[in-house]
Structure formats: C-alpha cells, structure tokens
Length: 317
Image 1 (cartoon, one colour):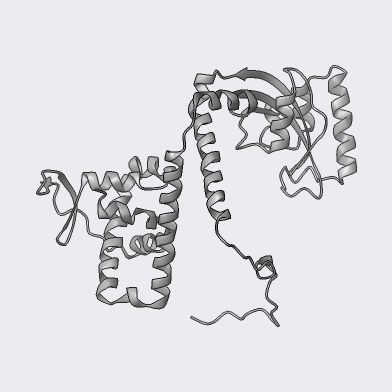
Image 2: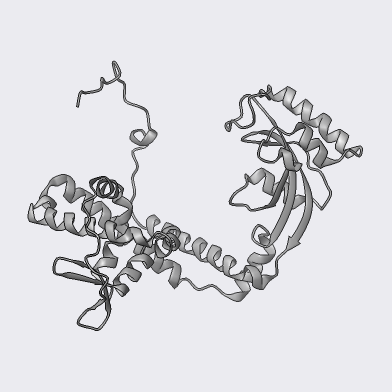
C-alpha cells in the first residue's frame, strides 16, 4: 500500500510558492536532536511533525513518485531540501483543513484539477506498462529508425540571417538578408569542395560563437538536442562529405560529417522499447478519445486576444 505521503507527491510541482515562502520565512525548525527514532513497525523515523512520524521508506516513496527528471536531484544533492518542503506542506495543509479552506470554490476547483491530473498520469503509466512489445517489433524499428542507433559527429558553419527566429552570434557579425547569407555560405562551401579545410573555414567564417573557435565541432549530435534539418542531413552523408545549404532557425548552415558509428541492437534495445511503448500507449489514448463524442468550439480556442481600450494601470500596494 502506498504511503499517504507519496500520494501527495505529484502536487509538489504546484508548491513553488510554498517553497519560496518557507525559505523567506525561515520558520522551519532544525532537528532538535540527532537521535535516531523508530516507528512502531521498526522503521527509521526521519521526520516528525506533531504526532505524525515519517519514515525513511516514506521519503524514498516520495522521491520515486516525483517526475523522473527530479528524482536524481532530490534523491541526491537536493535531499536536504525535502524536510523544509515537506514540513511546510504538511503544516499549512493541516491549517487549511482547520480553516475549512478546502470548501472555498477556487480551492475545490484546484483540487479537482490536481486530482484529474494525477489520475491522468496514473492512466498513462498503466497503458505504458500494459502494452506488449515483441523482440521482432524492436528489431524492425531498429532497421527502420536510425535516430537511436546511429551516432554522427559533425562540424558546421553558420551564417545568420535577419529573419532567423533564433538570434545568435556576436554583435560584430550583423545578420544578413537571406539571399546575401546564402551566397556567402555557398562561396564558402565551394571553397571547401575545392580543397579548403572545413575546420579552418569554420574558425574564420562561422557565426556560431559557441563552436567557431573549435572549427565548428558539434561533437556527436543527438536528435533531441539538434534541429531536425541538421540531423536529417547528417544521416544522409558519409564521413567527409559536406551538405548542401540547410535553412535552420538560426540562419543557413552547412555541415560536414566527421565520423559515423552505429550502435548494436542490444545497445539501443532499452531506448527502442521505451519509444515503442510510448507510441503504442499514445495510440491507445487516441483510440479512447475517439470513442467519446468531442465537440470543440474552434472560434473560442483560436486565441484571439481580448480588446483593451488601454493598458491596465498598476495598483499601489
């Protein structure tokens, strides 16, 4: 049976204001004694709040119930932050109960939204665990999708354009109109194809300040950290080859593949299984949604901002 403490965990993401309050108030007491205590079941009690005793197992369940991206931090170097967090949460929630704050309409709505969010997460996890993934399916995915198995080490040269969504580079290199940027980069590419060293040309001309000094070296690229046009171009090239011009959110670029390495099926099998499970679970969720009669007011959700006659004036504290 899950501890009541672990059930509260998903609400941690909503408690940033509480964390800030607890830090500024400085009201959380330090441990009165280093003496170790035990619960009736013999477990080590690591936190006592009034009559409530919280064990080491409760805390570990608490950490395991956190979103995966937070588990390592709060299970390691951030563990010392948990007592202050939990004490503030427990004390204020008990006070809120005494004051019947849970009956306020806005609190009732927030609790219901939180409940539905937690149940949604539980349902997703249930479907992820329940789907069946065969070894044959994984091998077919391994042959079809090379994004997980193929590692490409590349260099790149960036020339920024005026209309690029991402503004990068130094102030000494003003962005160019796209036609001028493409002509400049095409000239650089032709010099490289004629024998110029890609790394030297990157040091001289690339406007990516993060990689220019290292000859445009981007290392081994990963599909979740590099824009798709670069990933796709790298996968289509052999070592030593130079790409055509690639439009990206930063401007126009060319890349050169330095090296390629293909991981074995066994190396990427866990990642393939995760990807396939997520894909199948998504299909299950979509199938469930399709079975409901859903009507969307597209006009309402179009996001047209409400008209205001004048900006709202700030109020005095």
